[in-house]
Image 1 (cartoon, one colour):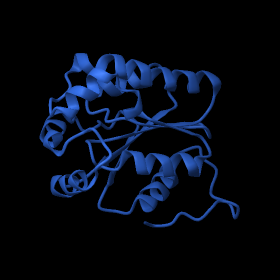
Image 2: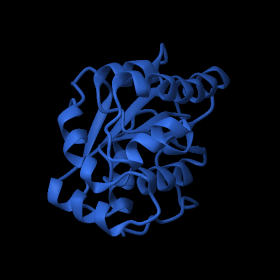
Image 3: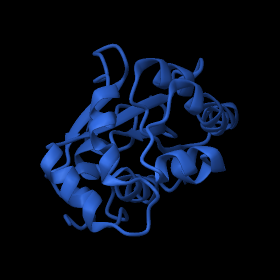
Length: 182
């Protein structure tokens, strides 16, 4: 892994991809791309109506996100991207041919995720789609450069632990900002 990693923070809706992704990008000093901001209006309308997306619905969206990854890879830049990336073929599409892409899979108890989903108000994804997300989820295999983190842990601790495991990164220095555990 390069000192400029490309990381996809993945998992079902409500697992904390945006929060962990933003913190991770801040710690790495690189760009953060919120995958949900790149859904086409038709996808947002489907999800808002409680209709799960199909593979076909996701194809163009994933191609857009894969473009961000390919560009960062071409430039040798770091990037953190949030994306559900529920299926292996989605992760393969995102990865493209890059060997710099690693996945941080945020995984947790369905009850906790439901609680989080019901507490948020500024997102188009309704809690009613949680079951479809879990049904579609294919846990990353050992050959996918993926780490799984338990979302019951604080986001700061998840980020710190992930960075400690990421090969090729220099160790934290005295100038590295302390990560709050919450």
